[in-house]
Length: 293
Length: 285
Image 1: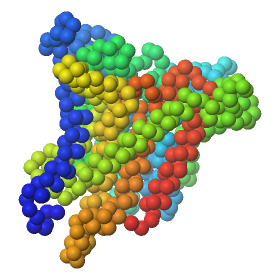
Image 2 (image 1 turned 90 degrees about the vertical axis):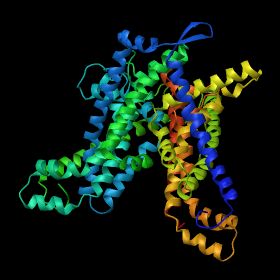
Image 3 (image 1 turned 45 degrees about the vertical axis):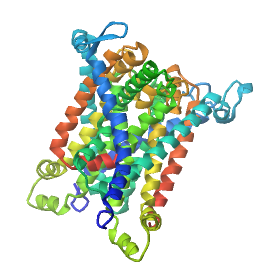
């Protein structure tokens, strides 16, 4: 206890005991594994058990169109999914904080959180049953006379986006609700009384105020989407690979750890770049949001 | 527009419509999964052929293997529980130590350490998995080559799954327990010490009872995070597959409604956990 005089040796021992678990955890499970991953990514096997430093894996990535195309596709789809999630989540957050009266808002908020207590596997199973050719929605479309035959709703890029938006909603709604809650209604009323319309209020008052929440939500959603595996592999087709699938294939199926490690670093690089850019924009709030998520 | 301002009728209608569509979007997949657990059909697909409990209680004699007779699914639930218990115990223990370290002590490099503790949350789960896999294999190979040790637990399998999940769940427990410890009124401890209590007694009778809600809350979250983890687990799993991995494998093959049955079971378990947490939150600390 810092405020009480104790023998320094004793205090040092306690500090050491408290530091040891943190240092073991971070060095053995985070720092050293990533150093080993970097070593793998930056070497080339020239003979059994003989390696030399090399950028071969990164050259392969740029030389092989499949690889960088999947990488780009994953990045673009993740950005799209993030934007869509924002569009879907913003009105919900607005209703929760500004429109619903009394306890209705709090209730709606809790209801929004419920699906995310259930594992992603279960939620994806739901979409599979709903969307596949023999599934619920195609059957409904036939019954309503919209299509003659059941149509396959799975294995499209749009399907992947629906699944990703669904999985990401919570991580957008929570930071949005937090930032909209602190917006004083009097500001909106004042603007309205001075003659501002809805779009003007949104642009000049709401969005500037909610900007930190929007940035925080977008970073988290982009990061999680980029690293997702389950949703794109189950809802997407064979022709629409996700970059995490390439990592899995190299590491587990082909046992080419050098190539897999290089892919891993490319994904980590993109993810970190986005997180860093967003961290700079939204500052401390990021930590708060991570805590909730 | 906010509720205190006049809203035209079309806007009210649009808002109501939006909320309805939003809720439908949120709950449709879950309701579908639950409903088809009771469909009397070999596939989880329409049409509705009547109500059955086969997908829970059916044994192979009826041609349908229900959840409670599906050894593989039951085994993987057991595996998931075992992994989750280890991850929870480790994460809460180390999270508590970290919380005291970061809230009560000053030491050089503290700022850097507090940033480093957040890092596991921003590393994609797949990459946590492959980096730990690669590092552990390296250690296993070195141990074998240099000392002839047989370090089998460092090969893909449950110990690695526990380590992989723990590597980022520990950040969450550290944040949750640390947040509560930060709000603690230190004068309570000082009063007890002045009145002659030993440090151990103060911890046992004052500090830990105060922390208890955060300890239980972070334990529940750790358990859930571990139970539902897929990305990191996929990279580290060996012969014994936790539930998410088994379910994923079956979903790729096209499964029977027994998966719906196990999903319904998971939903109920999550709901029970959430309700327990809510009630624990309301109890005064």
